[in-house]
Structure formats: structure tokens, C-alpha cells
Image (cartoon, rainbow over all chains, first blue to last red; front, side):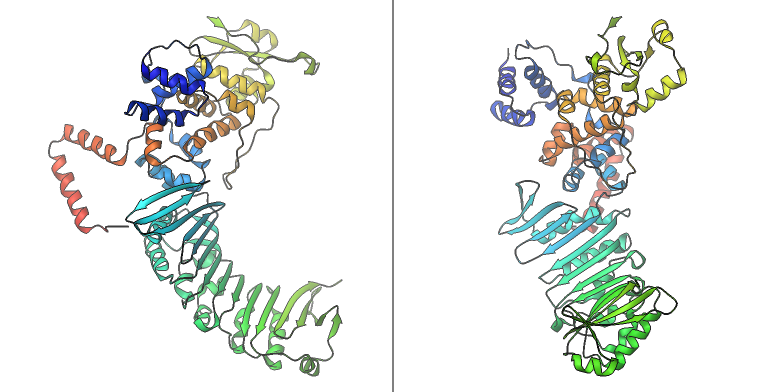
Length: 363
Length: 201
């Protein structure tokens, strides 16, 4: 028996996994062996340590590349999204299959900080870390790959590119979270949407901790597909919420939340009542504004709930003076107004820095 | 003709309901014969429709020739029927294609599929041809699992796939064999691409 078969036998009898055994034997004999031939002998010894060896005829055995496209699609569909992207690199045929199928990804989170970029594709995570001579990519369970002469943020974008380029991509959630200057990524995504079209996203979260504008990020997404938009920034950054109110994305959305963004002037309050739900921050709201809001909400066929955070303090005594005594329940104070010709009412709760309105079914 | 022991999986007679069971006879393309229970056949949409259309009685099953499955060999068919017998009576999963399903490989299936790649690919082919949804699911999952944790270069070796460069070289060689000027045109095209192309993206 040749040295080659002895080595395989030893590996198989020790029940070492086939690919690990393959790497060990290739290393020992100093050359690459045909994997299928190796696997044939490994399995033979694995199942029968007394196997005496036969001639190997690989020609009769079907190969992965001979499987029909529908089976390859089935196999690729069972792979973790990260490995599916790695498999894209293997051959043109696999790349063409992967790029032509509907991506089975419903959520992308692009999270950027000083020390890393983290991309979550559904529940799979890939992390790109800067390195003095390139970048390190972490994926799967404890898998790490060093890529020389490549910035980590460039690598992260290259990694996402094939997914974003797929015109069949339909995302339930897209989150772009950044504590850095994020314009390069927005610009990169814009170049992709110029090739395909805006991304189909239902829920869009945009969190930024640098003075960035909302509009270019929102423009990445198809207006009609967008149901909910969540924007988090810092008040002093002036992220352009007023310009955002002019977009068709805002006008066609169902839910909008803005966190810590610049406060809005109460005159724009009527722009929000087409939404089922909204959370915004406003400057001082006068009782005239509250009356106007109440009137519009009572007439709105879509409204469900809202939270209006106030920049200036709201005194309960003044609310009671304007609208009559509030009902106290636990630590909450509220007014209830029936919606005409319906079995619903709107409940207004008043806090120091918050007005909360919610639609309820009458008991 | 060699006849495989029937049924494919040992049957615990005591555990079987009193009603009379029917075993169909199938023959592989290398003339191996198998007896498979009616309930096990239901796992295969193709075979189930076939036997329904044939409408065999118990006598027909014994007297008529075994049903030939032309494009599957005996070794593969044995695995297929072992799987069907083990999973007989189980619900057949329905895939609406919308959400990726999580596929777990049960212990029995893992042991059954402890085979070389060549035979595994034949098993996948057979599961697809016979439309055995869950066998196709687990066998494809097994191949998918083989890819986990490997680099593109390792995957090329395992799956015997050409790299882009090898693919291009093969394409060029084929073109050259047909038209000697093809290489010149190809090189000119590549040069233009290099001049006008983006270096990173």
C-alpha cells in the first residue's frame, strides 16, 4: 500500500473529519491531491478499516458542478447569508445563481463605530476591523480572515455590494447606525441605487452621532415601500427634519419616530396627522396648538397614537385652566374625547415634557 | 437479477396496524429490485402519483414486472427507500419560498448520508427526481454544511470548481480553437477595461 493510502487510513481510523484529514495529508506529502479521490478512500477506510484498496475511477462519479441549477439553488438557499457571499467568490456559475435568486435576507444592520464596522444579515454577523496593514474580517463562530492592503470600511462595502445590487432584494428592516462621518457609505449606497433603483425597505432606522443630514440617507429607499422611519440624532446637529417632512417618503409613511433631533415648530403639527403613529420633539406647544392637534386627530381616519416631546415645560395647572380638570388615574392625568360617529375615543395624557395621545375603543 | 432483501428497512410487525399492507416492487437501472411499503412511497410525490395511476392490486404487485426507475442506480435507490421507510407517515413540508426554513438533520439521516460526495450528489439528484421534499432538504443541507468555514480556494478544491481565471482561460482556449483572432480581440477588450475601470470597486 502506498504512503498516500497509509496516511488516509490513519486519518480515517482516527475518525478525523474528512476535510481536516485532507489538509493534513496534503501538507504531509507536500502536494495537492484530488479531493474526490481522497474522500473516496477516506470513506472506504472510515467504514471498513480492513479495506484493501481498489483502483479509483472518478469519471463515473457525479460532481458538484454537474448538479442542475435548481438543486444548486436549493443548496445555496440552505447556507447562512455570509457563506453564500463567500461562495459567490468560488466560481462564475455560483455567482450567477446567487445573483439571480431572490436574496433570502430580510434585515440588514450596518453599524459603524471608530473601531469596527459590524454588518448583521438577519442573525448572521460579520465584523470588519481596521489593521495597520489591511483589515481583519470576523465571521461565523470564531472565523477570522486577514485581508492585506484594504481598509476595513472599503471591505465592508464591497461585502455588501452584491446583496444591494440584487434588484430582487426586499428588506423588512434596514438600519444604518453610525458614530462617525457616514457620508462615504451613503454615497456608496447612492451609487448602487443609481445602477439599480432605490432599495425596497419597509422599516428604516437611521442613527447618527455626527452632524449628518437625513435627506440623502432617506433617498436611498423607495418611498412607497417605506412604512416606518426612525431617526435618531442630536439636537445640535440640525439633521434636517424640516426638509425630511417635504419628502414623499414621509408623506407615504405610516409611522415616524424622531429621537433627540432638533425640536420642530408647532405650526408643522398638521403634517403628521396622516400617520398612524408618530413621536416627535417640539418647542413650546401653546393651548391653541393643542386644540388644533386635538381637532385634527379626531378627524383623522388613520391616527392611532402619538408622543410629542416638549422642549419647554408644560404646567398641569395651565392645562386644567384651558381644558378643564384632568382625570387622575394612578400617576397619570388625562382627558378623553369621543370620536364623533364612532365607537372610539382619543385619550390625551399630559406630562411635564410630553403629550401623549392614543386612540381607544369605548367600553 | 439480484433481489434486495425486502423490505428495505426491517419492519417491526407488532407495531404495524392490522390492516393489510402492500409492498410495491421497484427496479433500479442496474437491475436491483426493492420492495417498498405503500406508506413509505407517499414520501415521494413522483412515485406516489405513479402507483396511484397504475392502480395495482396486491396480485398485480406480485405478478407484474417491478416498476423500473431508469435513471437511478441500486446503491442510490437503496438509500432513498431506506430513508422513505424510516420517515413513512411523516408530514411532507411545504415550502412557500418566502422565509428560509431552518433544516435540522436527524441522527438517522446523518448516518444514512455518511457517504462520499459522489454518492451524496446522486442521492440529491434522486430526491429531486422523485420529488422527496424532506430528503432533498436534508441532503442539500448536508452539502451546504460542507461549505461552512471554508475559504473560496478550499471550496474550489472540494467541489472541483474552476476559478474565474481558469474559467476565462478555458473560454479563451475554446475561442482560439475556433477563431485564432479571438485572443487578440479579447486582449484588446481587457486592456480597454483596465484603462477605464475602477481600480477598487
